[in-house]
Image (tube, rainbow, N blue to C red; front, side, top):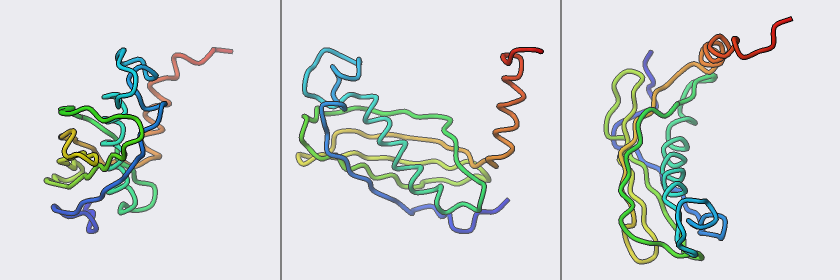
Length: 139
């Protein structure tokens, strides 16, 4: 299937003010009190990629994540604003590859490489149901 609205080079930025809920100590990813947790940075990178691509897909198509590699380069403190920009660098049939860069008011704080796959939502749900049917109680 061809997805005409997707093109290499398009990008989207999202922003978030870092709160207590986003800190490493609150998230359980470290003992540092007022600093952005790496898992939150990863989630913001994924969100930027999803908000770039998913609205451009035909009805009932979504993307699912396959690979995420990030480098959390610098600390960001509670109260700062993080901007995350995802750019499509490659499209190969249903595979979409992103370069992602995150900044706060002081400069670059993280870089990432992310791969997502375009899937039919109904087909995905059917496969998940089939895979997990063994977990359902039997009459």
